[in-house]
Amino acid sequence: MSSLNPVTLVRNVSRNSPWIVMAVALHLLLLAGAMIFYTVDEPEAVVDSGIEISTLEPRTPVETLPEPEPVPRRPLQPQDVEKLVEYTPTWVIPTAPSDEPFGDPDVDADLPPEVPSTNTAIGVGPRGIGGRRPSPFTTIGPGVELGPGILTGSGGPPEKQAIVSVLSGLRWLARHQNEDGSWGAISLASRCDADHACSDTHKSWVESYDDGLTSLALLAFLGAGLGHESKQFFEDPVRGKKKVVTGEVVKKGLQWLVRHQNEDGSFGKDRPYMYNQALATMALCEAYGLTRHRYWREPAQRAVDYLSGAQRPSPTGRGLWGWRYASRQEVERFHQGDSLDEAFKRELYDADTSVTGWAVMALKSAQMSGLEVRQECFDGALAYAKWVSLADGQAGYIDPKGAGLTVSGPDDHFDYHPAGMSALSMCIRAFTAHDHEDPYLEAAAKRIAADLPRVSKDRLSVDYYYWYYGSLALNQYDGPDSPRRNGKYWRAWNKAMVDAVIGEQETSAKHCGSGGWLAPDRWCHAGGPVYATAINVLTLEVYYRYPNAFSAARSARSGGAREVDAVK
View (cartoon, rainbow, N blue to C red):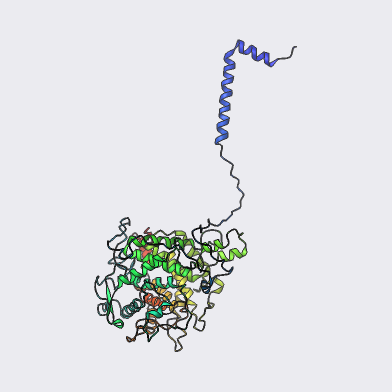
């Protein structure tokens, strides 16, 4: 049998049955096309390694700023600010004319109608938002002289005392404002009478905190509902009854702040310092929220963005954490190119309750003012506050192991009040979670109420910082606007606070110190009387400065008035 020749076979088939050859060829072409299509569109296989890898967020570009000297590889201390090399920042110059940029009422037309545009405490209309009572200083009408006689019908006895004291404090701040609009510890002496100095002239003050001090002073005016457009005025008897228009004071201060903001939204001639950053952010946000003036929106949003970016990442590898003296941007810039070793981790995850508290309050002011704030910033701060706190109401400064321990400082001869950390943790929780049933709040409130404000004979019990956060925490928890409203803790604290704070105020009308808080407390070593006066005024404004976080949240859940947090 002869072997089969495939060539001969194909030739015979093509001669006798050409349709078979054509069909085979067509099928071969279709098969080849299908193979090409399948090869191109087939997705790559996903390999499940079963390992979760956490990476840092992209580093913030810093090419626009000169590279500073490396910072020490240890937790940054306030005194380090004085030792760092100076560089020339890129100042942001306002585009509006510097002489009168506010000639026309240029408010944001894009804001939702639920956000009022009235000259009262931030975002507050005639009846308030979220239960907040409007400031007594803005209910008397523009162009009216601020004086205690007008306000005798406002509030109960402690509040009446507070109103008079606040007015005197605002007079002192206006009297000691620099011509360029700023306030400072060094420049304070130049604003005092020749034969009287409000602060220790032999102390080595520094300018590193001027951004923060200017912001704190502005917040004292803004907290009373007095913005750059305010026409209310007062006469200063110490300066020969000179008429002081509150709006001019605020406008000059805010313009100085905007001129000293860096291009990236930070504040600080030498480097961003997070106390300064948080306070400046809060001042700009409240200035914008108070008037809705377009001029403040852009610098306020840039400040918010930098503060948000400065928040430390969580050591869990997921989400955010708290804040510390140095920004996250600066830490990552210093370690650029380094592996994430243990030393890098300790610095990157470092945070403290005090700076975190101020940062949360600044972002809360931003949110209430309709600016953009990421929810994850609040979530991270809450996670940090829960971690640093104990179930018994105590809270640590940088970790839970330090709860109840003394936070040291230059003026350690003053008494330390551990409940100050408890108050900060309460405020962080109140303004991020709005959970009135959080059991920590009751435990912390007990600790604060057990250490009421008082002035001992040696004055070493005085702590303005503690008094401020204690007042804010308890007023939120069971003050008159809270869902609790029983005043179990707030009532006793309120009376003791007013007595202690007002008792420390200078009352002599014979020199420029009148109305100020000139005697130092434990934390006055950086800001002196400007810090003391501003923060005590803010303490006495606690009755109307913020809406109650718990009432606003409950109203929103029950379908009532729109919650302030929802405003974007």
